[in-house]
Length: 92
Image (tube, rainbow, N blue to C red):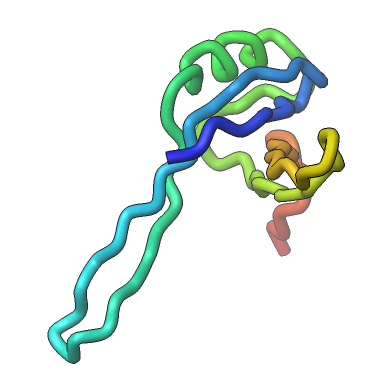
């Protein structure tokens, strides 16, 4: 578990918990998923009233970046909305 700064589409910075979940495959290898925990509802509520609303069928990306904090590199995440309703879809 790691606490990371998380920038939402409105530019507000929250802290979220990033957790790695490891899943074993029958072959003996593992597959990992990274899960964002804590403060998600706060991010959702803050962005339901903006032009970059978070709702069903929106295409989003989570970007990762690192920034220098003292002598260490700190992981950060940013939520980016790629399209709003009706944009970026083809209806032809």
